[in-house]
Length: 83
Image 1: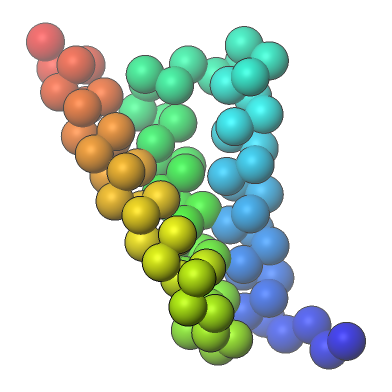
Image 2: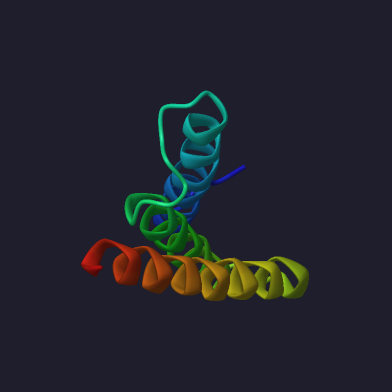
């Protein structure tokens, strides 16, 4: 198996998403704060980048949804912070 740069980028995205989810589950990260959706969105973007080199339609669709949901969460968190 030949691992390329885009694979490492995708793995970094997976680490961000799984890491933030883990931290939220053990009480170390508040899901209502901007960092949570921002890191999830960044992870989705990194995975989407890796998919531009090794395309998988189902993975592409789920990451688009993950990115959109993260964007909604980030906007809500930032609005909440401004109040």
